[in-house]
Image (tube, rainbow, N blue to C red):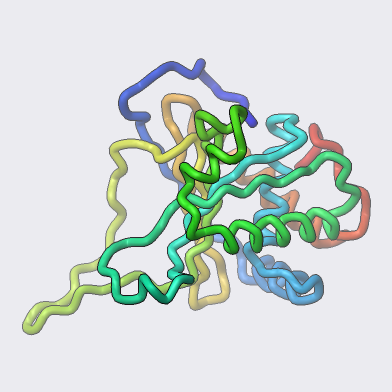
Length: 232
């Protein structure tokens, strides 16, 4: 899967990173959660299903390749190991022939659980098993949902510093979307993108298209999906 770019892709040691912040309103987040419960799915799978259809519309690819960060310790042998046991899990979503948003959510739910089941298998082993098409790890698009509070370092006699954004020196991939629930019921979104490939207006346009698409799909999840070229 290759997204359309504003500039040609050229080899770089470090891709300049750009960021965009957005907040999804509480009523939309509540609609996602209610729909997820009705389909025995998670909000992540619902958000990801709409994102998958957006990427399908942008790329025309019959299979959408994503990555998501996983950091669980499913093997009790590693409970006392000090370190960060995290990696990028592969999410390979077949979208060809999908008839409705209901069906697409079923697919993204199944793919998500499959990724979680093999999360202890190193990415390099998974890629080698998938074969030549994945030799260069084409998952340049990440979609994460963090449901934990930001850690705060507390030291005796010192007040915690106010959190602030850190300017990135480079982008981890072509496009990274990171969702985080807010106490207000809203959902914060941080988009990180490769600024050497995409203009800020392009990424903002995709975000606007995504939000309109998500609302449209939730309103009629059993209806035929919009055409790939009309995904917003």
